[in-house]
Image 1 (cartoon, rainbow, N blue to C red):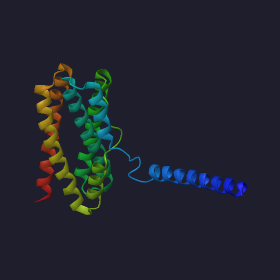
Image 2: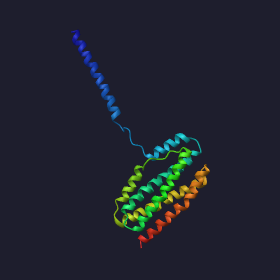
Image 3: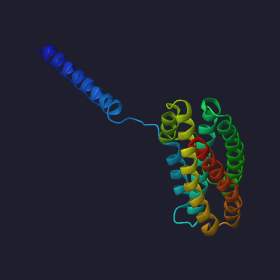
Length: 199
C-alpha cells in the first residue's frame, strides 16, 4: 500500500514538473518573441542613452537622419543604374551614389569623433520604398525614381538648413552648411530631368 502511495506521489510530482516545464517553454516561445529592431531606431536608442538631457542629442539626431537618407539614396540609385531606361537618369544615379557616399563618409567621421551611433543597413520602410519603385517598368520607373529624389532631397535640405543654423557643435553646423549646395544641385538636376521626361 505504502509503495502504491509513494509511486502515485512520485508520478504526481513528475507530472507537475513536466507541466511547469511546458508552461515555461510556452511562455518563452510564444508571444512576440525577439523581433528584429529597426536599424535607425536602434541607433537612436543608443544615442538617447548616451546623450540624454544633453544638447548634443539633437546634433546626433541630425547626423543619424542625414546618414539614413544617404544610405537610402545610395541603394535606390544603385537600383536605378540597373533599371532606368534613359541614359541621363542612369548618369544622375551614378552622381547620386558618388555624392552621397562621400557625404556618408564625412558623417561617419563626425560620428566617430562625437561618439554618435549610426544605423547599420536600411530600415524596413526604406527597403519597401525601393521595392515599390523597382516594381515599376520602363519610363514609369525613371519617373518614380526622380520623384523620390526630389521629395527626399527637399526633406533633407530642410533638415540640413536647420542643422546648419541650430546645431550646437560648430563642426556639425559647418558640415551641413557645406553640404547644402550639393543637395540643392541634386534637386535641380532631378527636376530638370523630370521636365524632359514629361515633354
